[in-house]
Length: 263
Length: 294
Image (tube, chains in turn purple, orange):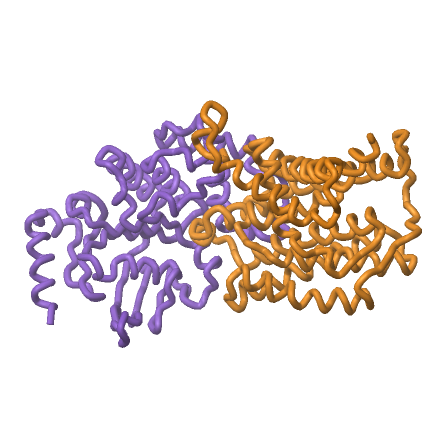
């Protein structure tokens, strides 16, 4: 197994006093290269789970192992070296004040110690870097290859999310986390970003978790579908089982778990 | 008359590294660093003590750089290790620095009468003002070149990313605490250098000389940006220096118009307010509708 989560516990204080334990002994596993789509209603713990994996949130107890190495004791930046991440908001995943080439360079250097002597070796992004990025964007069929020196802040939301996705795929990530990364996009941009997602996941062959609210996406993408509710896994389907599902059936399940778990 | 303008030009260049330091923290790192007020006086005090005891000028400047960077490091550590807000961290350090600078100087004011230059520059027919102009131009151009080179490396790119989008920097494995420590220390080293250069130029150091330095540096950066509208780091650094020189020229004009030296602080405040308003005031057909910055 590539990703093994065991006995994960995490809770948070609630307004007015008290505490809500969202994850209680949560277990999760994923094979190397497996693309898992995670669905669930608001507050079910989908994004929190990704944040706990990425280290943005610290779990109260339990263990998270990525390719047989424990993640939770690593400092943030050491953990981030192994994880590619695309956020929901296109504004969050990129630096708007830097150019496309500079953003790509930062992502490509994820495995290096940029703040240190190693980061002082040479001027970057240089011509060789630019050539490499142009080839990469052309190979992925993205019409941004001739805009490497444009500020990312001047791109559209879809284009920014495309760059964010390409950035997450650079630096040999062992785990790719996609947190509702098409939620802020129009249908055309969504289709473009999802096509790129499938392509990159296949090329990288790394373990991928994608959180989404789109049931049609959940039925069309990934190798496995998982439904969360209240910090628990309440449904799981492999590719073959998913063939039998429809969006209506999934919507019914959303309603059913809400009724069955509401006190 | 020319001597007056050359003097203002010299003062602008002496203050230029204050503008460069402010640009680094406020614009690149997005860190509101009030240590500047303390490290400017610390740099001036350090240089005055050492030069008055016969220490060679380059060593005195080096000491100012080191002390300034230590001051910045303290602020950055308070912020990153203890989680104190950036403004409060700087206020804490700058409050402590007042005592440290006073202890270092031993008294509140140290005059410098005989400064022996290391290199004798040509005087451009203007005496010492001409020599200062050449020496300071070389120092400032060297600083712009060094910082531009540094900012073009992966290290510099990582610092820019921290200031531009901390969330993205975090997701891309950039150790932000370390980056802020390096950036704020380097910025305060430059501010202390400005303090030392101003001390040498004006011929004395005073423990209160740092008051208002941050706002002064910010004003210089803003004036430079309004004039040059920079789109790259080297141009932004050049804009900060041009802002510093323009600011001192404006002060010289105010003095020429008959203003008393006692009115200088108010004049400074009004000038800065005007500079900061430039981006907000819309003049039909003249102002850029997109705003004050590109």
